[in-house]
Image 1 (cartoon, one colour):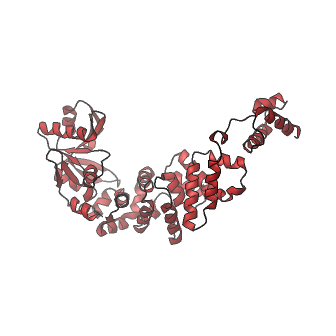
Image 2 (cartoon, one colour; image 1 turned 30 degrees about the vertical axis):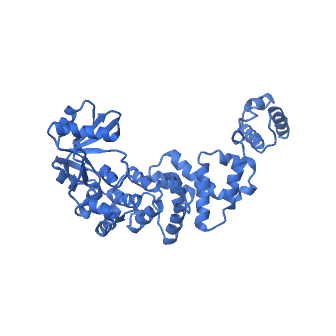
Image 3 (cartoon, helix red, strand yellow; image 1 turned 90 degrees about the vertical axis):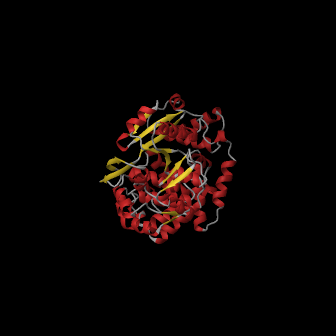
Length: 404
């Protein structure tokens, strides 16, 4: 069963039992833009208890907001009762909801392009907010009073930027002005929520445009990154972002955005965004190692191989190339690093050590601080190609230990 068939089955069953049911929101927008929707949501006048009664497989994920997941084949269709939201006290979620009509439900949504309904049985769009006109004009416009929409849910300010950049739209003047006036309120939103929106912007080819929009609307300085953005720094960051591969992820994009930031400070910013320890460590590694590639021609084999086996090495090459491109510098060092990597057989990048601690014990050494130093030196020598088999390695080991 396809996603479309699953969502159609939900609508059909609700209709068969006398309820209004429509596809709603982003899926309608995507279909009108010729984009296959990632999911399809259903909106209905049936209350949650009725939805649960009508379907064999359901999950109550947000009954207090009228939301139930309905299982159809391998798909779970979010099915929500038409509602009006009341009392947004935390700038994110309503304190209570009142079930209502489709037209009233539209008024509580964020932007006109997301306020569309679609009747899959009649195959017609239902538009109470002129969303189709804004789709055609490529405009992001808040539904109703933009001041009220952003006061209700501050995260909508970031969503406006995301939709504008990902779709190649512009932001309506009144909507943009309201964002600018409310920009400081983004600080009230949890860092996790902000990071999720920021990731959707930065992990997309329009990432540089998104950062420019964030700066233009006054949002950038209020993000959990906690830094200032003079014009020169912002311009360079956007040039680096533009030069990244299209498929760059959040961490590579953050490394580009923070290329002028010391690694320790960037790590602190990543923690402010509630990035994972792995993500924070990767960001710090990229920023610390980027300039080292400038000396790749003089880098000993062991040093290069230890860099090259890191899971983020391809991102390091991409970041180094993007920085060089943005600065207008020759990219010979980057090309040299890529040639050098291509010339090393995969099994020689991180081969098993030919010498172990047991060999040191056999030579009469007791475990202690010298163990790690000797083993590291031996492994570096192995990576440098000073020996390639165990008998030769043991000869080198005896020489190393004898020189102590």
